[in-house]
Length: 116
Image 1 (tube, rainbow, N blue to C red):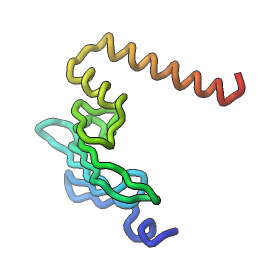
Image 2: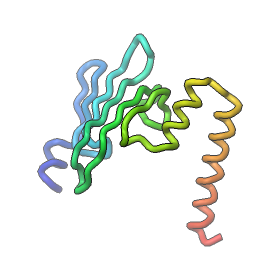
Image 3: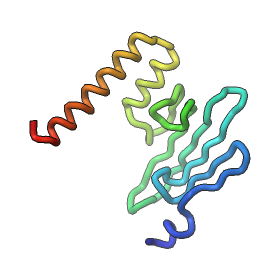
């Protein structure tokens, strides 16, 4: 276990603010907003686990880029940006279609991994 993992891993919470250290969150800051009823999340550009991770910012109901309504920065994937646009539009039918396609892609990966 490296020094960074041992002493800067985990997270610290102070009221509505949570700061994540050297872990899967790659040094992230999440702030719960009572007014928006969502998390405001920021990941700065850092070198973590031998690789540079670019910055990104998002506003999300569940503190993940997957559930975001607004996303910015080079560290966010194209699919998350599309999902955010769909969520802002509130197009329920289209979102259900996108969700179904994601499930089918996942099931296909499982079947391929099982040798089907």
